[in-house]
Image 1 (tube, rainbow, N blue to C red):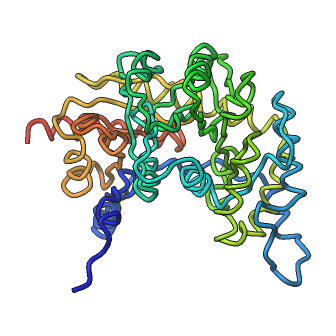
Image 2 (image 1 turned 90 degrees about the vertical axis):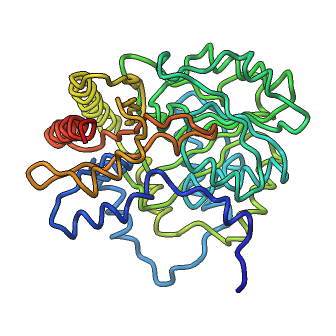
Length: 397
């Protein structure tokens, strides 16, 4: 019988999606599953983005340019200018989602066997992109006790070897919701300059910062022009996950030229989705003000309700729309599956993302879960009540 590749065998399952069969089983039994496992906002997509597609006068749905349409890339550069970041359309490559952007960047920067340093827990698909490119992830562990702040820079220094090519951060963080301070960004900038490394920042949640805190992009750091690479996406910013439009941004011309070669192999990003994304850039600031106010309200309710559960630890997020909680159980993966297979309250149960899948270090995060607070407050409150009841029954089972 033919065998699949060792790379294929090493590809990790998504902690966000791997429990889907159990959720589908629960639904077939007539149980309503409240999805806390996935960052799919219930916020409405801006109408102007949807209208742009409805009103597009297209007779032939043709390929776009490999790097994305000129009009869209010019408009992205203006968006960054409004955030006091100077980039030109030539510094931007449009991709099929932020995921493709990350995959292209890893292929551009790292050869098989090279190493990339990533503070963990981190977005689970980073593991998958690394495996697909034959890259070794070297995790730098952060702690729930510090809200998952950047680990001491000395911990990064100790892990740098001749195989180290880059550091990757997510800011604000998925799954933690942690927002890096300007001082932390400066420390990383100094480190990559000293060691001649790339600094990749996944900044797709840039707009969602709370409590008066400010996002600090690596593109604003002086002297990082050859080192800094930003990953961006419309998915979360405009609640357009299904558009699958992202981009790579860098002032390093060699990086952009190489990313384009990877992009040429897939021809072009989707045309209709670019039309929607270009229109979305005209979304007024009032949209984000309302969305941020809603997410802060949801976060505060979620944290307040979780704190009522005995034995739980919570990292209070300052950005994005995720929260990591450490449960009074030995195996959150088993508990999450048990909730779907064996537990319900008034015909409902909850689906969470087990925390271990957001780590590269074995045995870490086994008691943690990620909760996406992308649902309205009444549903969140009901979901935490179900979670609390489930923990009481599970611990006694």
